[in-house]
Image 1 (cartoon, rainbow, N blue to C red):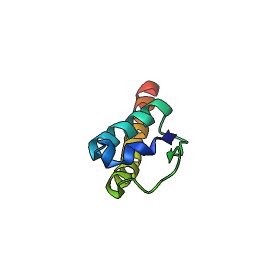
Image 2 (image 1 turned 90 degrees about the vertical axis):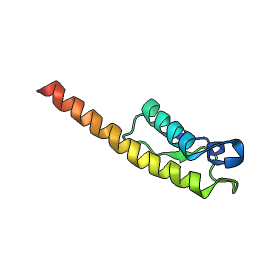
Image 3 (image 1 turned 60 degrees about the vertical axis):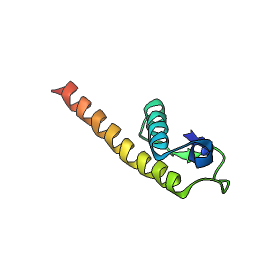
Image 4 (image 1 turned 120 degrees about the horizontal axis):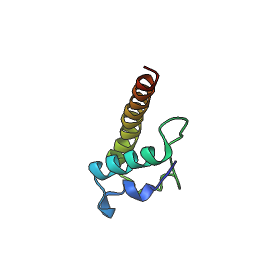
Length: 79
C-alpha cells in the first residue's frame, strides 16, 4: 500500500481521526493480509510524529480486526 504522506501533515488539516479513517479505507481496498503498509514517498520531515504513530497504530489494529472478521466469516461458511 502506498499511503500518501501528505495525510500525516497537520498543516494540511489532517488529524488523528482523518489518518485512522484513511488508513482503514486503504486496508479495506487492498486487503489486510500480505500487505506492506508503506508511505508512497517516505517521510519528508514535515509529518507529525503524532499522526505517524496514528497511522502505524491504525494499520495494526484495523488489520487485526479485518483479519479476525474474515476468519469468523470463513468459519460461518463452513458451519
